[in-house]
Length: 386
Image (cartoon, rainbow, N blue to C red; front, side):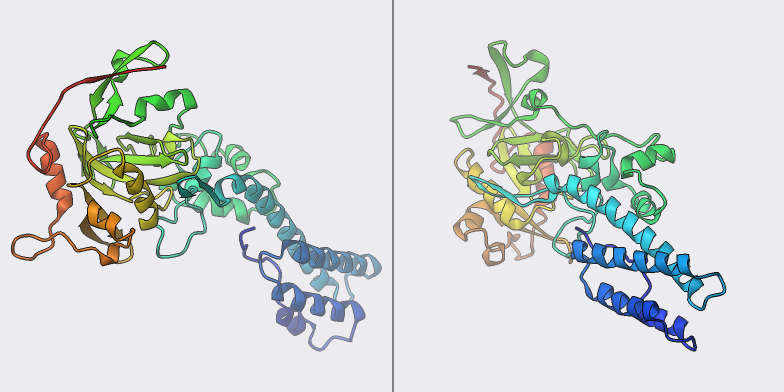
């Protein structure tokens, strides 16, 4: 369970409000329980709930046995309202967290640890984003919460009077109309974006307009990111993900329409990022993704897989420090040789010893449809389904 802000007053507040009033056993017991309640961590849900239930029982008992003129009557009225509000908020959060477990729960695959969608409360400096991407995955309509203010979610948490779930509450308040919807691919749609690696160490992708699965021969073409784009890196870049089964998918990025989460419908991934490819050759690869907060370690796992499928001898790896907002460019071969320790790798420099902006260089090569060695090949290849 995530930690929630508490609607319950502190023991010191109760003590101050009781100052000058006659001693009362129920009031004294209430102060003790309040002190115990706030000592408990936000994740001690069962213990906190038991204490809240006891506070509510004491408040109801006092109110039933006394009139409005009683010394602690208004205090117990206010406390009872606070407890009811907190219990409702905790129950809503419990239901939401139960649904989110399928996204947040740690998992792995034969190729390594997999990453979930980035969660709402991520505060660490290492993730690339702390947006509401997990809401996108939980929403039946997959609306683009990751690129919107979190005000709607905060308002729902604050609305202790409602027992509706978050998405039902949005519909009830007419707040969900017109929100952009992110495409989540069904399993039978993913082949269109699947990367196919030939025995020639070249990456191919299906020519969607010329074939379909199950018809025998599906035309393939050398994949290029020319003409594609991402919101972060711009032209000639594409987004990619590697599923837990080691299959890669790639496409252009469209904010609030097609995201990293689109390929596998919000499921966990081994790695994700962006890349530049021309004539089926990988020029540059990065770990830039907000949805899955991919780390350098995740990128290393992906590159290890690609090393047996592509020629990475001339591939550039883009390492991004999201705190300092700085990129470092190193070679894939050295990155692999150092076991994924990017800090131990030499930065790519110009002839004068200045760090090169390989991002711009990769975009230029892609514009020319050439690799780092100024070679270009467009030989088509056909792939026959089983």
